[in-house]
Length: 61
Image 1 (cartoon, rainbow, N blue to C red):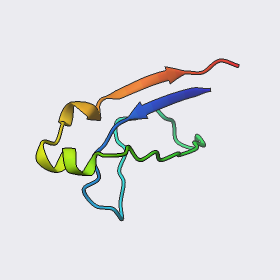
Image 2 (cartoon, rainbow, N blue to C red):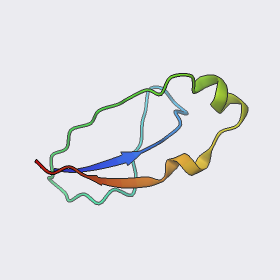
Image 3 (cartoon, rainbow, N blue to C red):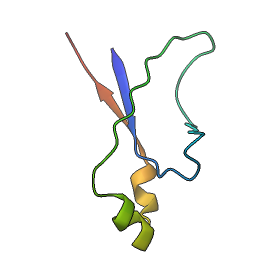
Image 4 (cartoon, rainbow, N blue to C red):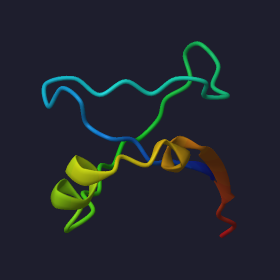
């Protein structure tokens, strides 16, 4: 299983957009959203755009 980790900052809580993924048309994916604690106050003061990098992860069973 190949997994990708991407950190984003929510700008619209009704819509999340993931771009620049190495996926093919018709490929099925599972989406899991983990909310980082204590980020609302931190991001309101100084949003960090460097956290929006895409990092591939490889899980081998």
